[in-house]
Image 1 (cartoon, one colour):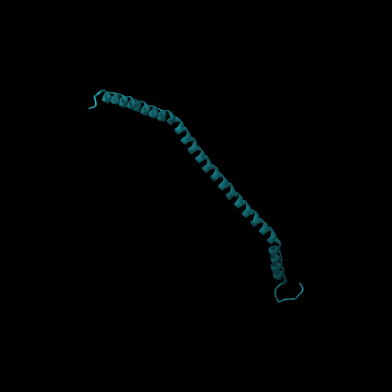
Image 2: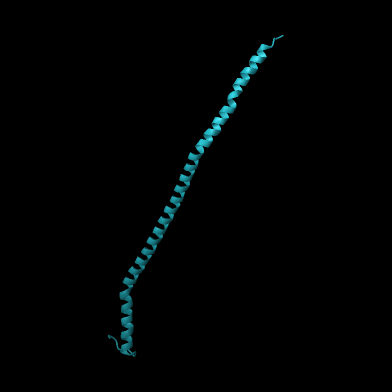
Length: 108
């Protein structure tokens, strides 16, 4: 000890050693805190990536389902269009027949 004090030398040595220990451990504690923060951030990064993949998978499944539903409904839509064409197919014939009947009457 450089200066004689009224405190017991063992106490001052203990306090000095504790202060040195704290100062010596500070860089290691700082790096450990940095590593822990980086590990936590990396964990959150992977959680977000997994969540994005799950959402993309859900969107892909919905798009596939919509495509399959459209493929399955093609026959139904084609049947409906064909039925409409068949049902309207006689309209022109009916109008032609009506015109020929009206033309057969004498005009006076």
